[in-house]
Amino acid sequence: MALPAAKAAPAMPFASQPHGGGILLRRPSSPPVPAAALRLGPLFWPWEKVKVGPLSVSPMGFGTWAWGNQLLWGYEESMDSELQDCFNLALKNGINLFDTADSYGTGKLNGQSERLLGKFISEGPNRSPDDVVIATKFAAYPWRLTSGQFVNACKSSLERLQIDRLSIGQLHWSTANYAPLQERALWDGLVEMYDKGLVRAVGVSNYGPKQLLKIHSYLASRGVPLSSAQVQFSLLSMGDEQMELKTVCDSLGVRVIAYSPLGLGMLTGKYDASNLPNGPRSVLFRQILPGLESLLSCLKSIADRKGKTMSQVAINWCICKGAIPIPGVKTVRHVEDNLGALGWRLSADEILKLEAAAMECPKKMVQNIFQTA
Image (cartoon, rainbow, N blue to C red; front, side, top):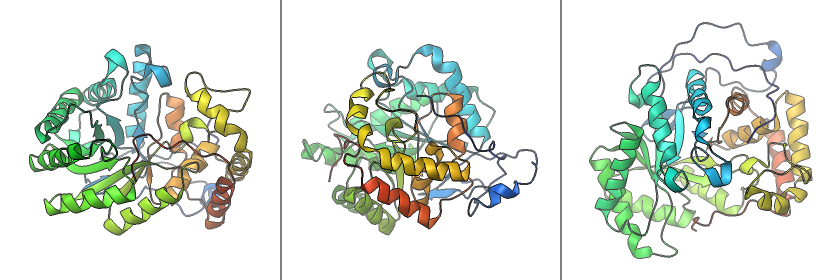
């Protein structure tokens, strides 16, 4: 989905950073940051990378759910060239985290997201595969009943990605709600991936605080650290469960990765009742958008005052909460806009105003059906 044109100045070149599983680039020197930009708040430029287990990653990554998804995101193979431009532009600007899944891609295009990432990595500048942090998720399909089958899923992802080792291997969802006996085998599969050196770090997705405590304890008993927890997290998904999960993760040293930080596009300011997205998203937008006037107005007010876009403010809120947002990108314009979320921070007062406005929304984002307690 297209986003509003970025109002912020282009991203400053990325300086060389200590290598720790992230991109190692050195760009030419650039003009000083304008004085106006310095008034936006505490800068963290050059970016301070954040830790995800043993990995050093950019404070924002990019999601690739749309890459291969025809049903929800209208993917066509003719888009591949621009998707490759998105990938290369992200790397040139210091973004080294890309999130994908073995289930991304609809129908015959299942796994297309991983295949495209593998192609883009192999055709990009000569660099170690470890310089690009790939986090993929393995679906808890009902036919994956043994740890060996889950390990084989990891090996299949490695083939599609054309790499020998994943940065982060993640269990896409918990089966606790409908097949609790299957879950232990999936946990054992994560352990085997880690022990075999197929992944550098282990993570989960769509786990609530209770299940996260259980898997963290089990993995620890097997000598495997839990490095990340991916969850729907945004100004439209900041309920008690998300905040409790964030608190638990902070206490355990587990990094929260925030998917859908723009609420599937509702926080971009692009849509209203007379201008809805195509496809299934329009149904959800009709239900939620009418109650977002206060929040969208607050986002726009802060964005205008800072010379930012509403998307950039919404993403920056996630960063200020200590999460790594992974907004999806389909166009170069998306990348350019999202990069404007970095290099500055919302003030404490602005964060409070946004959260107060979000609390007033009568309807929030629908919880992912795979989310557990």
